[in-house]
Structures are given as structure tokens and as C-alpha cells.
Image 1 (cartoon, rainbow, N blue to C red):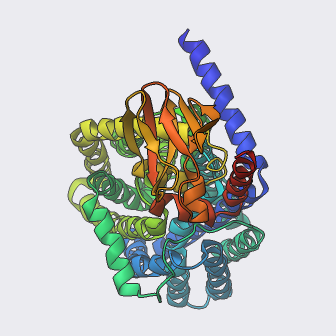
Image 2 (spheres, rainbow, N blue to C red):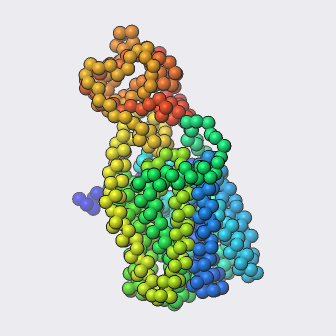
Length: 548
């Protein structure tokens, strides 16, 4: 029974992923992400090798820290702009600027390491905005919670593939050429990412008020207030920060473990990093089972724990086979974390702050990656390589245990909200809405109970709400003549709101009723703001007016 259930979920997840990748705009967005992150892993390997040549393990940590800190400080401000302009344009410019900076660095490898590090820093600053903007773009291309989960699973698979292919390509180029060739490949992949994004066509979410001028400081502060004021999002930020410390340590450990502990040489750095990619690919395929899951927060916690415990086991059992297997487990854990974070945030937060919140997360991650990278050489000097592996490795399991009950509560709340979304999606005019928008509508729904015989709306009154019938029946009358009887899944009340006229009919409960109600201020801008939903709404209004 369990095997059959797992097989069924795998088949469903595989179908969802395949369907997701067949949609042209989603496919282009996903491939752009994969190209950009294959470039990032190539860059990480190249810089690690150059730094180790220049100054050993300490230089590896310092270069990682110096590269991350300025980007982390700028990210929240840059993503404030990404929330106010088209997110595809942000991604295009990131790819162009990154390609220019790394392309300029490639011929300087044998001339000036300092110039290479400086150009790498310049390329990292815009790239810090890439994942937040891309993560905020994906929900606008999806229409159901399952499709968003599938989109993030597909992106995770491509991210994992890039984690595998990027280091392997880097290892190959290091073997036949050198770091300069790796940097040239990084520039080419970055430019290709920009080209792919330029081919995406999507409809940005409507705003309920005319956009004010961009105020970077104020917009950034608003995004940070959203994070601080949302208990569950703040918890996920803490967990992400601890995971990122481990990630920063891993950037150092892959170099030190390969060269000093396992003595596999410089190509061994690429092989160990590729092991993470192998696990990430397998984990991403396995994560397709979670496309319909209502326990994403819990699985995210498990994934975070999987970032640390394998490092501790490498410290206890320092053999090449063990290291490769454990790093593959780290990669699998990363697939769970990415699927969880980039599905949970759009479901917990409104679209208009998503890029800023993802930017704040990216900033935190960049800073804590730098912290982990700079602390690791100190721990190695105090505890030796094996002791440092154990110490760093135990952090993530410990913090996940502390947060476990809250993670389960997040899942329970989102499961209840998913039921509301499923009901709203049955309304034709709401069906075309992207998931980030319909999630926001679901959070604004009022549940109402109406006794048999009671009037829900009266002809001639001012309309202030739209209704979806959850249970029961109503009769629709105009001038005391019954026009129709509506039941579960049907909706009413849209004409007065969309045409800004008095109620055109009277609606009374034939049986006890359960209703979902949406206020005018949420319903009208949402339905009118998307062309597909506006067309559906107009067709319904015309049909009902003709029938009346």
C-alpha cells in the first residue's frame, strides 16, 4: 500500500513537472534560472581555486566574505525597485551586467587576481537580486497552489542540475585549461539567461492604487516590517540564516576537505561540489512527490537539518566515499529547502512585497554565508578540519528541533486556506488568476452563515460584496419574478460591483446557506486588473443582464 501510494505520488508529481515545463513562459523562466545558477557554481569553483592558490584556506574564506557582504547590504534596496517595476526587466539587466563584469575578468586571471576578485564582486551585487526577482515572477506565471509547487520543484530540479553541471564543467575546464576559461563560460551562461528572460510574456499584478514614485529607503523598510511582523516568516528567516552559515562553511570545506583531508587535488574540489549536485538532482526528482503535499513547512525543516548532519558524519568518517555520499545528502536537503521556501513565501505574503521579502532573505543568506565562510578557518585552527565539520554540522538539526512544532502549525494553517482557494478556483472569472493573487483573495474571504428565508442582497441596494455559495441554495428574483436557482459553487453579486450600479436582483436563501464573501475593494481591482479574468467577468455580466 505504501509503495503504491509513493508510486502514485511520483507519477502525479512527474506529470505536474512535465506539464509545467511545457508552458512556454514557465519553461523560459526555468531555463533562465538554470543557466544563471550554472554560471554561479562555475564562478564559485573558479574563485575558490584562485583564492587557495593566493593564500590558502584563509584566503578562500576572506574572498567569499568580501564577495558576499556588499551584495547583502545592497540586496534589500535593489529588490525594493524590483517590486515596483516589471520583474522580467530586472532579470534581463542582471544577466547583462553579470556577463559584462565576468567577461572582463576572464582575461585577467594571469594578470591580476585582485582585479578578478573586484570584478567578481561587481557581478555579485546585481546577481543578489536575481533569485528574489525570479521567485516573485514565478507565482505570476502559475494559477494553482499545485502548479506553483510544481514550478518550484521544476526550478529546484534545474537548480540541482546546475549545481551538478556547473562544477563538472568547471572541473573539466580546470583540467584542460584554467580558471580563465571557467570565467568565460560563466559570462556566456549569464548572457544566455538574459536572452531567455527577454522572451517571457506575462501580466504583472494590478495595484489597487496608482503607483507612487519609487522611494528606495521607505520601500525597503516596508519589506523588512512585513518580515518582522509575520511570526512564521520571521521563523523561516531564522532557519534560513542558520542553514546559510552551514552553506558558507561548505564553500570552504569543499576546498579544504578535497585538498588537505582527502588529498584529491584541485579537480577534487569540483568533484565534491558536483556530488552536492548529484544529490540535488535526485532530491529534486523525489521532491515531485510533494507537489500536492500539505506538509511543505515540515519537509523544509527536514531539508535544513539535512544540510548539517552529513557534514558532522564526514568529520567522524573522513573517507572519500563517505564524503561523496554525505554531500549528495546535502544536495537532496537543498532541493527540499528550495521547494519549501519559494512555495511558502508566496502563499504567506501579498504579491506587492514578494521581491522585497525575497531580497531580505537573499541579503540574510549572503551575510550568513560570508559569516560561515570566515568562521570556518577559525574553527579549523581551533578544532582541526574534522572537529570543525562536526561543530558546524550539528547546528541545523538543533535549530530545526526547536522550531518543529511551529512548522507543523504553518502547514495546518495553509491546508485550511487551500480549501478556500479550491472553492474560489471553481468560479470561472477567478480561475485565470495567478496563484499569488488568488492566495491574497483567499486571505480576505469572510465566511457567512445565512438562515433559510433570509435575504442576502436586495434589488436596488448599493452593492458592497461578491458571494460564492459553499453550501445550500438561493433563488434569484428580479421584480418579484424568479430568474434562477443557484447552489454549491455558484456565485452572485458581481454586476453591481463591476458596473458600479445598484443591485439588479434580490437573492434569498432557499435553504440554510454557507457563503464566502469578498468586499468590493478586494474583488473589483483583482478581477478587473487581469485581462483573462476581466473577459470572463464581462461575459458573465452580459449573459445575466440579457437573461434578466
